[in-house]
View 1 (cartoon, rainbow, N blue to C red):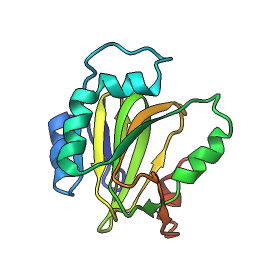
View 2: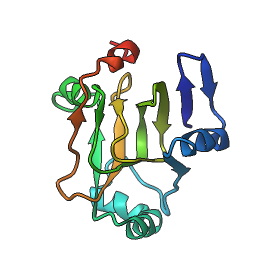
View 3: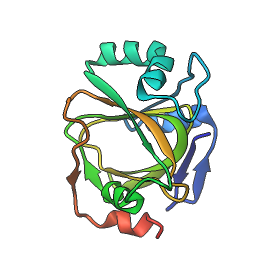
Length: 173
């Protein structure tokens, strides 16, 4: 279940419709997707993509996305803390960052027009962050994320770090 947090205001929102509305007003798409079949922990990337093809294919075709893959990390993943650090600094992308959480959880942080807020994403959560938006991502404390990543650029994830330091105020050790 997604949870939106605005730490500087002490606000926490758990109602999905309120979360969708809040994000939509800021240009971020959020919805819930469901698999068309039961998945297991050891399913292949192809099996995962096929289970969500009924959601994935129309979205990609309607929005001009070219490729999708599955990222899967867990506490046993080699260099897991190094992977976490790569995402933990505020950055932007030259393309939209589109993620669908198949399993696990992760915390997306946003810094938009001076406002900082976070969205805890869990299984079933779909998120599309427009290009140029400042954000960062934390996979702690559980260090378990399995997500479909959707790209318009076949080269995949490329970060442009801002070096603003604002992330340091909100990140937990």
